[in-house]
Image (tube, one colour):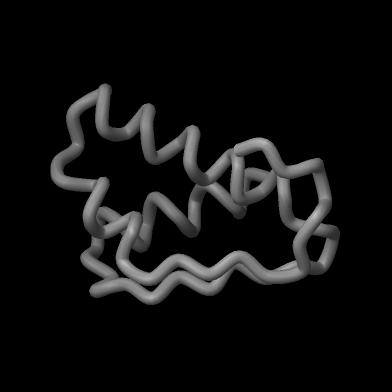
Length: 70
């Protein structure tokens, strides 16, 4: 994304991660990791990532682990 670091207090995802996380191949996981990295980069400290998702187990656990590592 072309947005500056720490630019947003909220990032809203309505189904993007679900649509992109079609399987657990290395290519797909790499794309998801890049997406989540960018979300973390543009969020201000204390900001919120609102993810509207079907919350399939592999998706929810990957998102939670990604932000827990920060």
